[in-house]
Image 1 (spheres, rainbow, N blue to C red):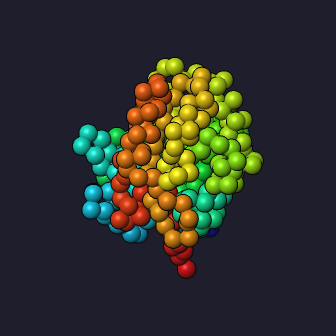
Image 2: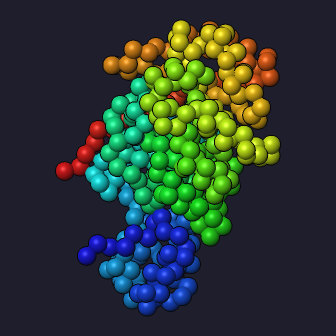
Image 3: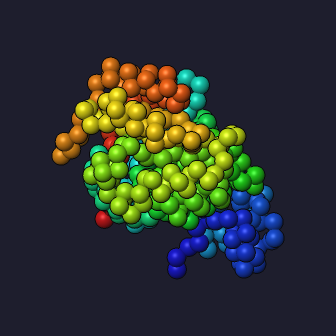
Length: 340
């Protein structure tokens, strides 16, 4: 009989299940505390639950926590972890240590349906949706979990295409009963899948990052086939109906491609496109790979592009490139692992 997975369940779901097993009414509270606050990795560690009830839990349930099966460490200190999902597909998460913070980049799917031409995950195609448990496991089973200060949903997959599991994981990350993270420490990225993005905007308070990459919709369509189903202009019109004047941040991600989207006319097009939106722009260096004809912009051009936009009043930053030597950088996650 398939065991009940505790990780990723809401408090109400877990309370209903524990009562159905004739466990005390406070068992769900105990389980939440042990998993999310005390980082327990087994039922045996839960010493305020009776031995008899721990044995029942072991018989009927599993925590849903499992360690990474592979670790790759970059020369710059970035660490890429490989996990195996319930379907046996590989899922990658990236730990990025910095001087004053540590960020974890988590995946929401094994593979991706969006098929962006410049992304290795998009090239591998879609394999499987991840459950809330599989998303949270990337956080809780990370050896560096206790040191994390930020989480970004920018790994494998499109979060708004797996919105139920992503929102469930966000609720547990930010719930006072569970991990009690501030939503301002979490950023969720999306290509602009409008139904899912709308739910993320209305059901969470996390920061939002939109994968933009071109102000020219025809060029964007050539690079990002999802532009046909979810047009950028429709996404922007929707975003203008939400308030980003307070602590919640809206940002746009923009990979710099040589002689494609890195010219002054491209910068001016961005200014026109984003006019009226309170936002920031993150410029990203492209990490080239085989079978992709696009090439990254020269460093001097990236710096000049950022300076032009900042001088025109658009808050623009250049994202530091990390983990390229272990294929952990932006757009490089592409595990072909499949358990047998």
